[in-house]
Length: 414
Image (tube, rainbow, N blue to C red; front, side, top):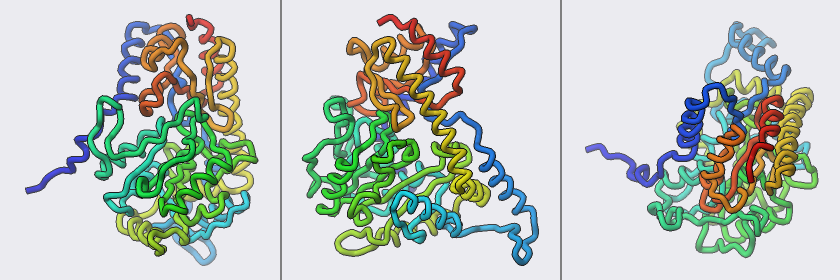
């Protein structure tokens, strides 16, 4: 008789965003003529750059031609690992930061989120997972779904069997050392810049993590989806800027937030040939086998768009859009400064992590902000126990709406 994966029963309901939608809808129905400002969503809002549109168009037109000598035309399935030219362009993109990556170790995908979940399939079922708290929920949910957790403990707000690395005001929202790894943690999810806190790790902080993981045969799954927002060149954009990282780290990247591909869907994962367990170099081969079995490759058209992103002109145009969002972040920070709300992040990341006033609960602040300023943000409690008492603002938005929303902040009664 067929059965189901009982680990799904451990999952808590998708409370965060469904509850945001529910409360926002109720407010809108009661205030039909009121304009609502959405500063909580982590979805890009700016149109794609012209050079990227041209790249996507070129990909579409190519599929309408019969291939001729020297003139590319229609193609069906591509390599599951990704278009060779795109993988080489990604490797060159790393080289611009002084990091040498073998294109054969680059695996193009339809976005970072799917890779972050699928990567656990190449590890042992008894491996212990560590996550930052607060952090992007996908790491935790996929850990639970894969059977690497116990039940949810309502008293602690945590899953048994998962190691939570507290990220709070006292440690600048990055896990502090000494952090016990040996015999305790096998897989470590790191998100840098962090979603939701906007915190960005220093080189020395990443060096400590890499050194400890290398010494204790742990593997870091490094989510660098927002790396292009690190405008301070003294801060690492890639984990592979750190010595020994290729021996213990997998890096996941995305075109979604840097080039506006949230709906186009394109990303990549680097699994270095040097990365192995118990003295072997198996992980790249396992990931290659997983991808060639379950994945037929990213869209040919999306990959043509990705090639356009990585050109010099594409980087310049995408860079201007990042600057646009970061100016939004500055505007939000200035607004919070004027009303006396303490915040973190929003400098090398598109998220601002605000401390709720008067020790107010995250959801209480959500209601207060919505009712008094008509702004919708994201309660920090939805990102983990350490998120209680904080609130996420997103810089993804149209400038006019951001300016109007910040102007409304003056109506907040503290």
